[in-house]
Length: 282
Ligand code: BEZ
Ligand code: FE
Image 1 (cartoon, rainbow, N blue to C red):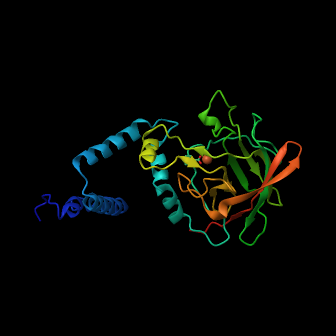
Image 2 (image 1 turned 90 degrees about the horizontal axis):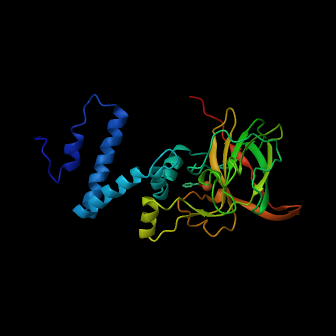
Image 3 (image 1 turned 135 degrees about the vertical axis):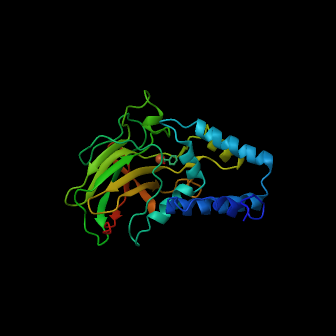
């Protein structure tokens, strides 16, 4: 072996340089990455201008990132990579609540509320009651389960996207279940909204004829001692984007009922039970 580069043996030439002392998992991942990358370049017969365009795209993707904007995760989301990594790492038994994307708008330290509290701090929107139970696989209530919830406002923006316009922690809250495993809070019926599309990822979506919208959803992180944490959403049934979510986050088991109700200001009631899987030892 000369170690010199040729089209035919390109991937092997690169991979043969990996030292035997390299971390075994890193070497495994990088070998596969190089193999697939070289196969891809040959498959599409990538041209020099296309390669330059790709480098320019990745450069712009990095340049727009800062403490509050992560364009690479957005890219992973619109390519379905985020959902695939999540799927292969969170296989759960039938009946357990499925995960979906976390998204960039979760904030640590949201206010802890008593059950029944209203998480919408600005008024507006269509008022909605969210309620249900946190259960184990045998249908028993889980006491002490923590639900961290957040959603957009009636204009389709999260509070962190509009500092100074929306109150901090608008449409966010943390609730802890009692012995009956029940949760109950008020807020607004979420609305569909576009993912941030003023950067390279949005431009790519436009060039591909893809829209940037997500169907309306309420985010939940549900955790309890001894159980796997569920990072998920409930989706508003009937939303027009359920079949074309820009980040592929919809699973049919996560579509929740939103029934009209007439209780003072509250116009909607959404019920959903979360079913958690025990942590497997080891
Ligand atoms: C979200 O649901 O908040 C979200 C998820 C992925 C990308 C952008 C936003
Ligand atoms: Fe969201």
